[in-house]
Amino acid sequence: MIRNLLCMTAPVREGVDIPCHELGPAGAHPAVALVAGLHGDEINGIFILSRLADFLGAVEGRCYPTLRLARRVLIIPAVNVLGVNQRTRTWPFDKTDINRMFPGSTIGETTQRIAYAVLEATKRAEFRIDIHTAGIDFEDLPQVRLYEPSQEEREAAHWFGLPAILERSLSPVFTTTLKHSWKVWPGRSFLLRVGQGGTVQLEHCQRVFRALVEFLGKAGVLEGVQLSNEDEETCYFDRTCCHGVYATKAGTFVSDRPVGRWVAAGQEMGYIYDSFNGNIVERVVAPVSGLLTGMRRHPLLFEGDLLLQVNRKM
Ligand SMILES: [Zn+2]
Image (cartoon, rainbow, N blue to C red; front, side, top):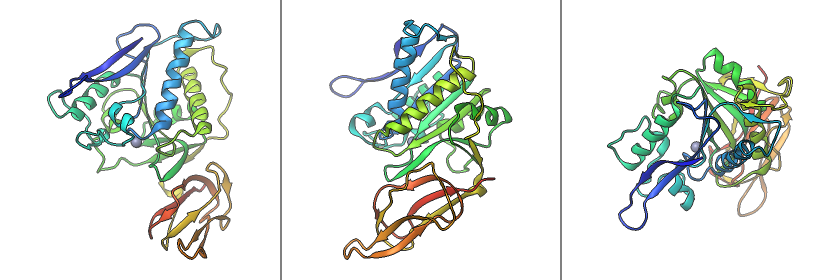
């Protein structure tokens, strides 16, 4: 069933609605709540959740006789509906970041009302998943991000079967995010980072789609999923594992290395060229041996820009 999470009137012409999908048997609260598109230019997550809603709708319609949706799932594919239409990260009217507006308010600015509606709809779910990408200049390997997790969250993070789980401490700065607001509620919360902003990366999207189906299977929400036995390819990394390489000079950075490969310390990762003369300014190498979890994709550099991230095995 498709319903509107929030309907907002506009000064002229039609109002703006934020639609969501409610799937599976009726219940007071969803067992799983999935959110994407808090940032309007993060299209991978929006694409993944719209496809997941289509798939689970087909499961409900008995298109897959072996599968059954045992519990209720709420999917909000695109919170920042206007931002998606205009290809902007922020809410177009006032340029505010919806993911800095939580817990929100019923009487505040539009983005505060949106934040409130999203939190109200999702906070009582047993499992809550918020999907993001890196910025439009950078590509992140599909990964689970945990911020000061509970032991139950650490365990369930493996259910996705994604290549990397990155654990971080809670930021004292970003306390107004959806993920942070979920923290006070019982249940388990996860943030997924998938690829690069501004584009759809089909391979990453397919991988995360499978990861979500696997997760729903292991959570007992989707019955009949052929579950993989072990997640031997999932690696757990904390802050100390992460090694970034930053540009020491401005120029044009070019690399054809795909994220998700294991690299050796000193291995060639790309080159910085002089943007005018074309000569090589710097040869960029892996700082340590580990998994290449992130890579800059916008070629033009300023000194100090992040080029790549390698996570060393714990
Ligand atoms: Zn985001």
